[in-house]
Length: 270
Image (cartoon, rainbow, N blue to C red; front, top):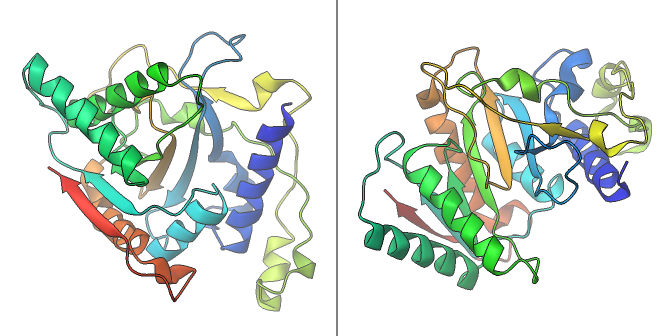
């Protein structure tokens, strides 16, 4: 397994446990995070990877933002660009599409922004993904990327079962950390640290491919860098909207980690 991937997965799991991401039973905790690539070719080692995590809809927004910073190690943004509306139908001329795509990516790059969307492969979100893909192709030698985070509903995601059993676990000594209260350590120590991965990269990265559309569901947009997928047991994209608003609010609040920093600006594209 690629050591860089292994280290990132280890960091994700450690952070998830420290921040009490325990919305599921212990034996299910490690099944809903990891890397995915939107490529049917298993042997393709050059395909770009996306990270994802599945969480309960009851997860606290502040904790989610801390996870993004500490688990995914996303750099602090200077601007939050929130993309909303036009989830299904988004019609514009070729000229306007080019202006929208180039302007959006240019703004994100020059302002050190995070892009936040619904993560679905439809409408305006699909246009955002295509803009990022074009930017990456033109700048493939520079290895520069724009954090693009899809915040969606687990049940609304087409073929979400492909995301259920991708990751591995690593042994973590929770007894030595001061961040976890003694009352929680007994429960955490019951988590089974079973390892599914071998030394082959194909077990470290899941493949997400959707060959047929599903009614009342939508597949993930393949050019996002990260996905937060919240589960409330229902395939309804709208149930996550209040939590998304809270997450964006706390993303703008630098005081989560540094009380002396000012608030992060935000900009919405509707």
